[in-house]
Length: 322
Ligand code: HSE
Image (cartoon, rainbow, N blue to C red; front, side, top):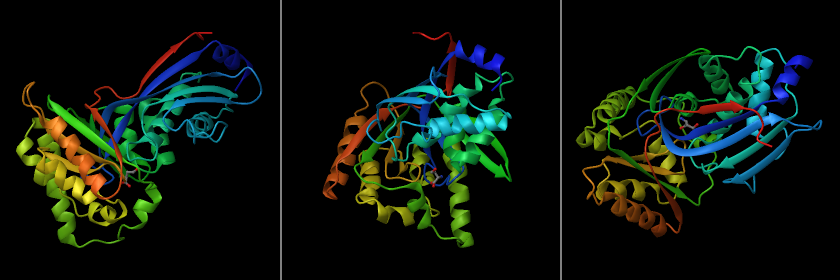
């Protein structure tokens, strides 16, 4: 960073709010993701000393690194590198509500948050499309990153390094419950069990359902969600890694959820439906069903009740508050 930019940057404090995301939603493996109203907030400014400082509250406060290896700072460094600049030492403050390592896009939120905040310090900020490509390169999969950045339901297709995305608004009334069980499952471990090749009929099975899922979520067709969340690309291979998952998927549907799926690579389960008026009792019923299914497998779970996020990551830049 040049001296002038550093001087300008020192006067800045940038606050970013990034939504959680649920990727795949059943048949949309590596392609479909939905932003949720569960947010991580991070505040970035230039540190006064020569080393970066990291302060974390909320989810992951006991386990996330507090130095340059923090994912948001690595993302900030990657963005500066792409702009041909050296990053300054940062002061990063984070308040996390997205459970880490749960299949709710906490890594994407960290990367998108770090890049978006650092972008405000560049003399010539990158576009959201450039940030998307950099973030996907770092994260590996677009289906969490794109909705974290843009909000709503996003379909992503990769063409080499280039990324094509379509944002689709969901119909009013979409309700979501996420059960986060006390199970450790990393994305690499959940990808290692997937086959390299699949029969053509499995590809065709998923194609129709993924298209129907988008139609159902955007038009509010709850009656379609049950079969439109069926999948043969990843869930049959991942369920055995998540005790209680298969039972939880079935129990959520029996309790009234239109659809249910493993969230991202797991271990969380997401259930969704379209609310029918204020007296719709399904939230309590589905929540109890999810808890019982995991309890029967000897697991506890936390339940998050949420809604789709409509705007994606937001960035507020201003003078430091201190
Ligand atoms: N689509 C990815 C997967 C999401 O299911 O492995 C995790 O980043």
